[in-house]
Length: 314
Image (cartoon, rainbow, N blue to C red; front, side, top):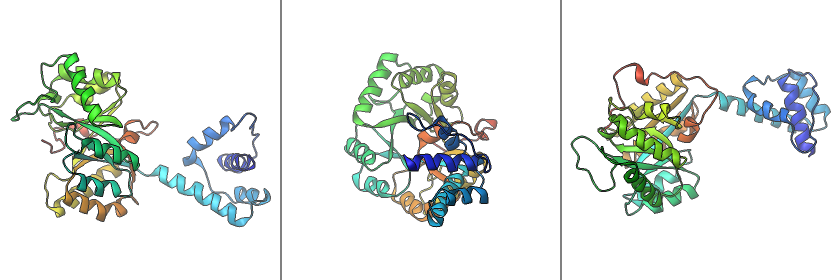
């Protein structure tokens, strides 16, 4: 309780540039505390706040540690946010284990009904990674299987596929499309898909595999939490190219503030992430896809639909 009171006291002193303000902690943490936490970007390091912390009896070392913590949180919150979705898990457990072991907030998108689908989704969740359902959708030039979202399907058929897929991929908090160049360009079908996802409390990421996609816009129109892929980083499997595209994605993230990119469960992609994520994570905040989708209060520059380029997908 004393720590909470002290934290509230110093935080408010800082927030108001050293001016004392009343605090009420009756029944728990005061409402002021929430405002302080949400306003870390406004906090200023002032000698007065430091002196007050000393007079509160915490000592110089503890006071410096406290101020340092707040400063780090402020800097972290001010960084652009970048989410990396890694697609196509479920074929192999070995490569999945290696991605899961990376000490970063990666979002793993798992294909349903494969040998390792359940294993990967369970293990990823257990180790603190975020899981998406990588939902197969109809694409030009590809045959349609029994579990592929296709044009002409009814709501009942789509519900059946989604529910069975979710049973195969546990802990999924959202969905992104696997392929789908034909399906995502069909507004009628996408309205049905978004309705089903909304019923199940899932968000949607448009993988943006075609410049003709309407999936993201339909999701927005229907009020479904959503976002879109800005760039596939590994359409070229050569590691030098993967590095080039990952750095291009980093540049986008710095400009847009909120960005999602997609890679795939491949050794080359893994090697590049192991090499570059320590550098990238100092320039942007690497977050889960859900943190981009549900982020509020920050204006970002949406360049996606201002021209005809797309994410170089399939």
